[in-house]
Image 1 (cartoon, rainbow, N blue to C red):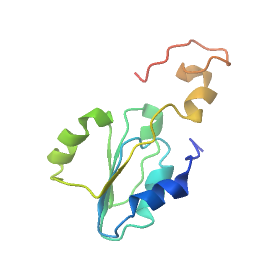
Image 2: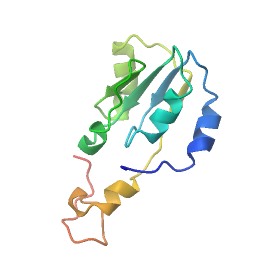
Image 3: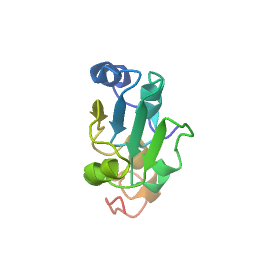
Image 4: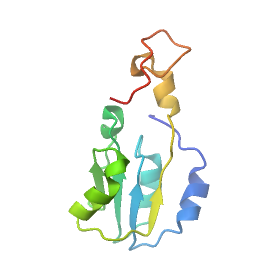
Length: 121
């Protein structure tokens, strides 16, 4: 698994998901939070954002989900592009994940042998 979401149930509880709501997972990552949100959506929609190639490989095939392969700093522009003018909730799990630290080739680990880069690009 890419990453086990921290405080998953508290995050989902805090969103107070409406079955027909529009939600944003600003840091899609391994898709753990996104899957939990989708479990509570009926006719609603979830937009996920992530620029990390590893995360993009975790996309979810579901008509209620759109993965936007960009940094969430462009959130407003891309939601507008998709015709979204307001949302019911945004989740952002900020910071690096254990997945990024546990793979030397990602360049984030100071404890594994690999080139230290500390950049997402």
